[in-house]
Amino acid sequence: MAGGDVDTVVVKCGGSPLLRRESVVGDVADLVQQGKRVVLVHGGAHEADRLMRELGRTPQHVVTPSGASSRRTDAEALDALTMAFAGRVRPALVAQLDRLDVPAVGLMGLDGGLVEARQKPALKVVEEGRTRVVRGDLSGRVTRVRPELLEALCASGFVPVVSPPVRGEENVPLNVDADRLAAALAGALGARALVLLTDAPGVLRDPDDPTTLVQAAAAHEDLLPFARGRMKLKVVAAGEALAGGVGTVAISDGRRVSPVQAALAGDGTLLHAEADPAGSEREVVL
Amino acid sequence: MAGGDVDTVVVKCGGSPLLRRESVVGDVADLVQQGKRVVLVHGGAHEADRLMRELGRTPQHVVTPSGASSRRTDAEALDALTMAFAGRVRPALVAQLDRLDVPAVGLMGLDGGLVEARQKPALKVVEEGRTRVVRGDLSGRVTRVRPELLEALCASGFVPVVSPPVRGEENVPLNVDADRLAAALAGALGARALVLLTDAPGVLRDPDDPTTLVQAAAAHEDLLPFARGRMKLKVVAAGEALAGGVGTVAISDGRRVSPVQAALAGDGTLLHAEADPAGSEREVVL
Image (cartoon, rainbow over all chains, first blue to last red; front, side, top):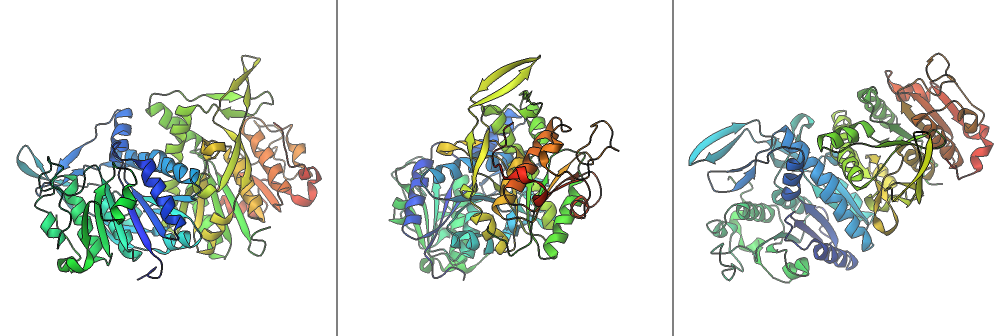
């Protein structure tokens, strides 16, 4: 596993306006100063939806039969999310890191053949109680990571800031879930820890009651019954990261001060590799 | 000068729909295969204007007293051009290179503190025959290039694909002219050649007569009287590149087949370092 000799942390920070991005960036700067190798992964569904509306388009979100929520990615949606991620979310993160003297480099999964994905043959969606199959969605599942680009950048002192889209077959760009992208990168880099920040304290037994945090689970499957919507994908991503060899995954509150430091100190829902034997099954089916 | 031991070529390809981008990309792939270090610089005024209109905004272009045309870059224009460059033009170039097995990495001048600029204190514009001063324009002049990021990427086998915006003071992103950005990068990398592709055969004595190509000039100043609009900035960029130590600058036709190979073989308007003594004046005032 590459990078086993360096302490590597992958941080995924979503685009929710509730997350304290400045504090996330401050934590990343501290980790870099401590000599750690850090990769920051971001999505930006909120910004992508905002841009869609500015362009007079209608963002479409669908629900899968298992209850996970997902974006319907047609060509117009992929165009908007690519522009929102690469042209709004990422430059802001790079500039914030730069202000803290951390030289950051924005990347898409497309760049340098970094991340490859296989297009989902069909998207099963539930609409008004009925399951329907949508074909041709421009989204996929990560099938391969070539970590050389990230390793070269980290070795030269840069912090990679990575987002979808990634490279599909025949070089067609595909959207992928950013949490699962972060999990794949963490695995390929042999990361010690993956921190998935969210706008909740972690996985909650009762999603409406923030006092019902599940602090730890023996296996990620144990968390699936509690996870709804976006959280379901975070739990799946956590399982994939553990299966990929990541030591610890934290699903933690990105709304608090120093969210990354807190997560690494045990805040949120924690999963450890040794406690998740089922994590050895690489493929998780939603 | 960095990279003096490697044969480095910087290619600037604009966003005009007339340019043969696939052929440019093919030439870049050939140069890479020949062991050359290549950096591709792009703008995308056409795409930026298109996105402005999609967003219901009005692109504003101004003319300076010397006759050069320039974009009026307010916050809305900078937002649109950042998204158009990073989210439309660049991913397409990266994917095209990827299809030819050239791993390319898209960058903004912002990334990794690559390019710094000083904001123009005031933009002098001519409107209906009268000169007016516009302040607060989010555009600047390149003041510094840190080539380490490009060198690290090239050394690892990647082709950097670079565009504005770049980093202004206090990390505010600024637009810069992409031709002059290419010139600054070529100088910092100690490039042998800079190829500025355009939608004309080169600098023409009579801009309306393509048979009046100026094939070579002793100094870039000799070309200024013929150059109008966008071409003026290309000539200025050529002078800056020569002053920065670049061996040869070609202002060549990007509409033809194999435009980069043709330019390197002498097609278009050529300027050589030894023939441009005035190039030693670093500052060119528009």
